[in-house]
Image (cartoon, rainbow, N blue to C red; front, side, top):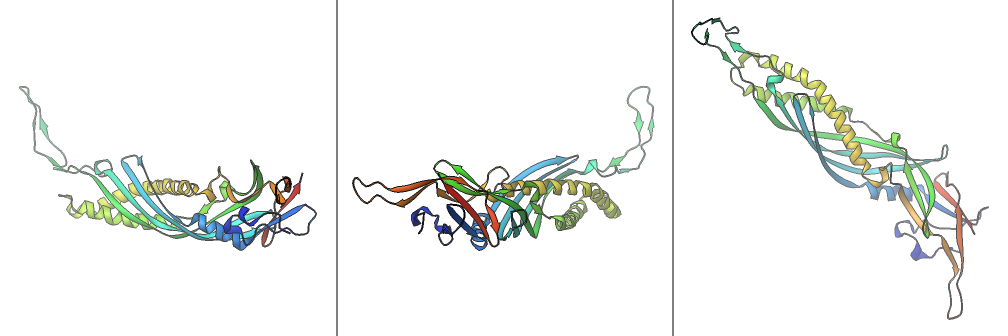
Length: 298
């Protein structure tokens, strides 16, 4: 006997929910590992676009992020009753707009280096001519690819009543979200090195000083780039948190079913339906490869 009619079951889960089986409780539901994997993949398979900006000392940086999330495999862990999501592929690109005042990071260059002045009692002092390099403020956009990296996270599973329905939900453990952007640091610094070299190469009067100046700028930039990437890493995690599955504040609903279970519908005038209400849902348990939910009637 089926306690829930077909039109009350979400179509995505119709092959697996609900099938009552013999148990100590009045009713038992089961969600398979494969079905949950398909449902999660549908939820996270999307492209996200976001942008932000900030400043670090003499540098101003902005970035536009395009992320693509796809894939993912669910593993149901008996020990600790956890749902583990692995192998979510995260890839995309960042357009890093970097603005800096070269005068704040490059040495002052004047010819001759020292200006000699003679006091003039009748007016302005007499001084030898001196020409100094005026360093420009530059702004450039550096495209940075985000190589494919893997994301993983852990969830717990619970059931809660919401109005006339019971929801089976996943809640992420916030500190379990792991994503590694370490390879991006070297890619970013290499890209910045090329751009800075090209920008400085177009500034007049530098000549043989170009290599030393590039090193000066890069040394100043290296810590800034790491700070930018740290901010970018945090920003990308915030973007990922916008997806329902990864939100630490909005539980992700796997499925729901009505609290009122109809056994026999009314057959005509004067004939009432036979139904019972689910009074309690026990804490879901994981018995590989399924999430098992047991219920009791009032």
